[in-house]
Image: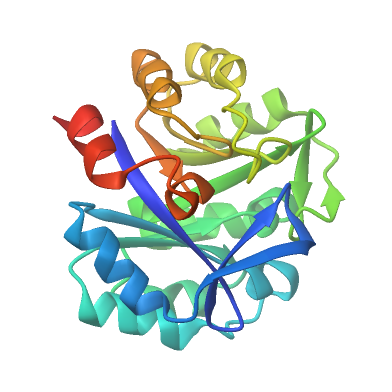
Length: 237
C-alpha cells in the first residue's frame, strides 16, 4: 500500500481544514516546496496536493507552487481541484503525474469521459463523502447520485484510481472510516486511495489488510501523531 503525504494549498501556504470547513483552517508551513522536500527526505515517493482555492472556483492560484515542487523534488505529484482540459494539460506539462477530478467529474460526465480518453491513467477521480452523500464544490454542496451509483459509473467509464475522502473524518485525528473502504473495495474493482482521519499505525494496518492501493496522510503528519518515515517502512516494506 502506497502512502501519500498531503499538502493542501491556500494562498501558497500549507494548510489543513477540519471537516472541510474553510473557517477552520490551520497554517502549518509558509513554504510548500520545503515541506515537500521534507516528505521526500523521509522516503515518500508520492505527494497528494489540493488547491483549496481552485476546488472552490476552478482557478489555479497555486500553480506556481505545484510547478516548483515538480521541479525541485523527484516526488510523483497528484493534484486535486481541477475543472478544465486546459488546466489538466497545464499541470501535466509541469510534471504532475496524476490529476484528480472532483466536482467536474460528478457534475459533467462527458467531461470526465473526454479527460479519460485524452489523458488515460493520468486521470483519477476524487469522491468526497459527507453524511452519506457525494460532496462537491469544495465540500460546500452535495450531488444527486448515490455513492454506489457514482462508483458504478466510474467503473463503466474505465476510471482506474479513486481517492475517497470521508469529510466527517477529515482533520479530526479520530480514525478513518474502515467500514466505508471495506464496502467499496469489496464491491468495486478500483485502485482505491483512502483519505480522511488516518491518524495511527493501527489505521494504516487495517486499511492495508483490506488490500487498498493507498492512503493519504494529512493532519496526523503535521501534528506528529504519525511519523512518515516509520509509516512508510511499515506499509511499503
